[in-house]
Image (cartoon, rainbow, N blue to C red):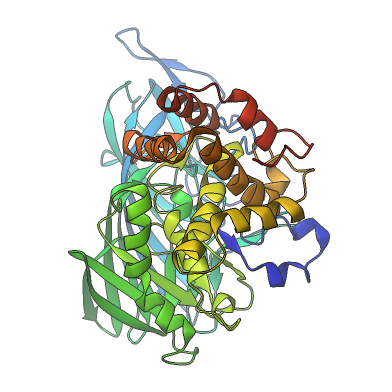
Length: 489
C-alpha cells in the first residue's frame, strides 16, 4: 500500500496512520436458518458413532493484532465467486462456492461476512444450518467433517453492501461510486462482499464472475478469461491461479478505458477511469507497467504471477494505492503532481513479490511488505537517474520519527510512516551489513523458498543469518524495535 501523503495532513490525527486500512465493525445481520445458540468458535462438541469427537472451528485465526480476523478449523483451497451488482439500486447478489480442507474434526465452522443477508447454505450439497452474528456466518453442516476431508460450501447471499469504517484506520471495503463500485482495502475488505476466511494466512486461488450492466467494466485480479453479454448485462470472468490473500481481492466497476495486451508472454490488462484526461500521466504510467516489472525482476527474480496490469480510479474518498494481486489499484491523485507517477508504480509492483507472492504471517509483520516496497522505490529512483539509494536513506534517516517501532507498530499504527521509512532503512542497513552479494542471496532465497506462502519477521531474520553467516539479531532489534536512532550505517 502507498498512502498519498499530501492528503494525510488534512485528516484528523487519529486517522493519519492508514487511510486504506480498515477494521471490522460489529454488525448484526439476520440469518435465514438458526443453529443452536452458542458462542462462535466455542460451544459443545459432538461425537460420531465411531468415537471421533467433532468440535467447532475457532472464530479467529489467532492474529494478536486482530483476534477476530479469519477463522480456524479449515484451510481454503479455492473460491468461485459469482457476483451480480446493480449500481442503480446499489444491490449485490452473490453465489460463493468455497472448497476447503478440514484441519480438525469440525462440528461447525465460521466464514467472515458482514452486512450481507444469506438465503441458503449447503455443505457438500446438503442443506446446512446457518446464522449470522457480529460479522460471522456460522455454519453447522448436517454431519461432522473429519480432519483431512475436502468439503465444498456454497453460500447464496445478497443485499446492499456496506464498507467498514473505523476512526483509527479509515474506511474501506465495498463502496458505491458515481458510476459503479470499488471493493478495496487493507487489512480487511473482502468480507464486505463475499464470505471468506479473511486473513493472509489462509491464501487460496480465485475465479470471479462479475456481472454488471452493459457499458461498464468489471475489473479484478489475474487473467481475463472472457466476457459474455445477455439481457443488458455483461459478465467479466477472471482467474487467479496463484494463492492470494483475501485483502488482495478487488472488484472495480465503472467506466474505464481498458487496454489489453501482452508483456513477456503474459497478458497485460490496464484500466484508467474515463473521467481522467485521456493520454495523461495516468495512462502513460500504466503503459510503462511492464518496464517497471522488468527492472524489479532483475532485482528480485522472476515475476510471480500469470498476468500484469494496473487500475487507476478517480474517487476522492480513496487517496492510496493498494497492491491487489497482479493488478494494483492506484488513486488518481498519484498522477497529478507533475512527475511521471512511476515511484508509486514501483512500490505497488514490488508488493507483487513482497506481500502478494510471499504474504505476511500476521499483521505485526507488515514492515516486510512496506519496507521492501519502499526500498524498491529507492532502487527505481537510482535506476532512473534520480537520488541514489544512499541519498534516499539519508533523507529518511534525518527526517524519520523513531517513536513507532516498525517491527511492532500496534494495530492502530499499522500504516504509520515509520513502518515504510524505518522499514526501508532496515532493509538498507541489512544490505550494508552483509554486502550486496549476500543481500541479493537473502532476498532471492526468501522469495523462492516462500513463494505462494507466508513469512514472519523472525523467519526472515533466521534466513538472513543462514545466508550471510552473520549474527544479525542486534541489527534487526535496533532498526525494528528500539526507539533510539541507530548509528548511521
